[in-house]
Image 1 (cartoon, rainbow, N blue to C red):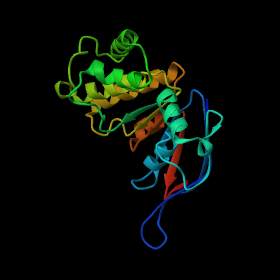
Image 2 (image 1 turned 90 degrees about the vertical axis):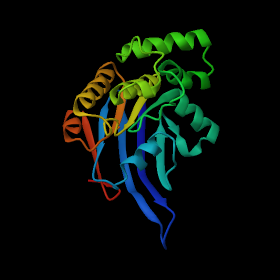
Image 3 (image 1 turned 120 degrees about the vertical axis):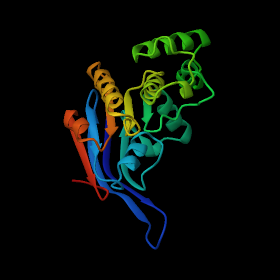
Length: 220
């Protein structure tokens, strides 16, 4: 699995000439790397992560995901690639409060057409893996922030993705929970998972195998 970006430009409409979020960004990420994307607020970190995660398209440039030209893919092909190959972890968790932890983890598998029995078995195993055994029936409102993020990580792993994309995953957590979540992401990386993480935390970026630092839409 390889992520290859060449001269990515992203310009949002507005004003006379638009607002350039990315201004010619190029890099490769190889299987099994742990890459931290850093830089000041507004430098283009989340925009870059959204493009890597096939949630957005660049205005120009070239992006290949696992050997495929993303800009040549149809909407359906990009959707399938997101579902099957990418796990997302967000700062605000993005869990459904009306569903149990188990049901939240099952959602990506439901969209992938996984058999119901296998879906529940896999979800239960993932919750156990992230330290939430016995809390399968708890809703997000019954969990702490750190526990919610653990559910989000389990959900991200539901379809056995090739890469985890994490956007400030510790931003809403206390220091103890933050450390636990970061340790969990590094443990997944040690198992061979590719991890790309947006962060302002210097301690996290210092632990990463590589840093991509952005400023004003460019790599420093």
